[in-house]
Image 1: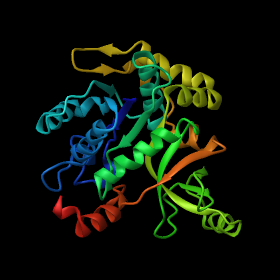
Image 2 (image 1 turned 45 degrees about the vertical axis):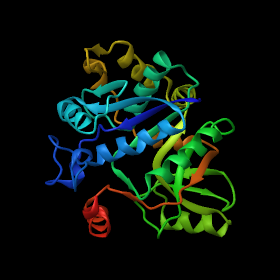
Image 3 (image 1 turned 60 degrees about the horizontal axis):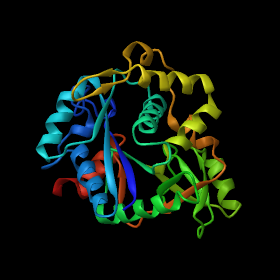
Length: 288
């Protein structure tokens, strides 16, 4: 059975849904029904055990690590590793740190699925089937993302552009309406980025070095000098807090010439702001 690592990203500050979401209880830990967004992501990810030998790595924040443990216990989930950000420095420092840890512990070539906790999907089994496709596709494409057909143009989302019948595309972060129109005129089909992707630690670290060698070195050093306890590995607080705040899309995705894509055949909502949260909640959230 193929081995994979699943990274559950639960480290956001949750400020965009204030006052419902706060730094003490960020949105990934909010319960709109029986389970929080974090717990729903855990349950979705665990379905991958039907297809792979899975190691689970959870990425959290220092000020919510107690809440993270509590919600893990509520759904009988025991992750293999819990990595903690001492503060929020955006997604690049966090995910490069995670990749460095995976390289040290599980190897540089193991397929790794990155799953954020602020996205909601319709059918979990369908998501896992597509993730299995993405894992297989990483043998040909080093970086594979789940994508959906956009409902309409939205300047707040990143897009992949490619032919409608292809498994390849390239990423554009928040394109203007003019750029969006130019792509369509060239016959390129737009896809929304679901935020879920599969790659390897080796590829992610290699692209980080290409993007900013010193930044990548400093991110890896926060792991080499991490603070360890029985339950957590905390990125070195002194080194981590002075890292630049950089999105992983800026450091890596935007610089990739080609990306593998797997179109998603179930519903998807990014719970990124009040408008998307309320739209999802009144359609389906109340049933969760």
